[in-house]
Length: 223
Image 1: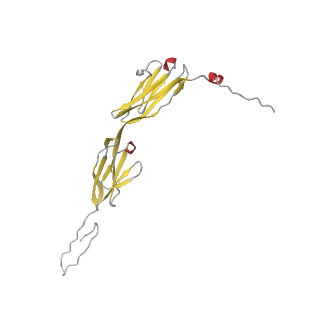
Image 2: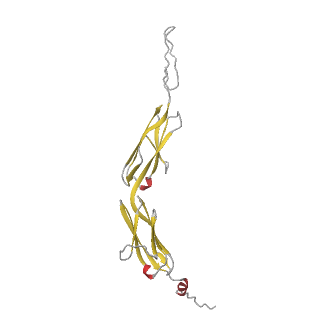
Image 3: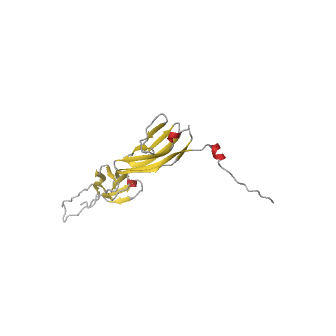
């Protein structure tokens, strides 16, 4: 009688000619048969993933955090109040030693409102070029708008162009004039919220003017 996979036992009968029964219990490689689909949640929500596997002998199931290498044992993985930094691929690995492990990944996307991370005041020369930058991290990506001192929306013209990219918006001044100096507000938004920040485009003095405005007093010392 086979009590373990791939092992055989012969039991001697009570008398000559007795039947001998041999049973084979085959080993089966570990295999994932059902796993969570890719999931998208809002920051702060709970995430529950599952990974079901079969095999003989019974396989182990482990979840691995791809970003930090953290490991969680068991078919189920629960992430409470998920943070944006936890958005990544989570890998399920099952193994029973019969064959190489079977593994599959689940992508977790975390939505969160925009947060402006790059903004600064910028000096500019008359007649020269200048750039104001507004960078905002968000999922889904943010939409950008620019406003002037009097809250009028900024629009492109022959001296000013707005360039929107995936995570930032640029105000490109091709020929700075007096009318361009002032306060600009960047407004970034998605369906989860909005953020805004203000920055100043101010006139930069010429190098010559700057040197003339600096006075050094050197005391007269006699010995």
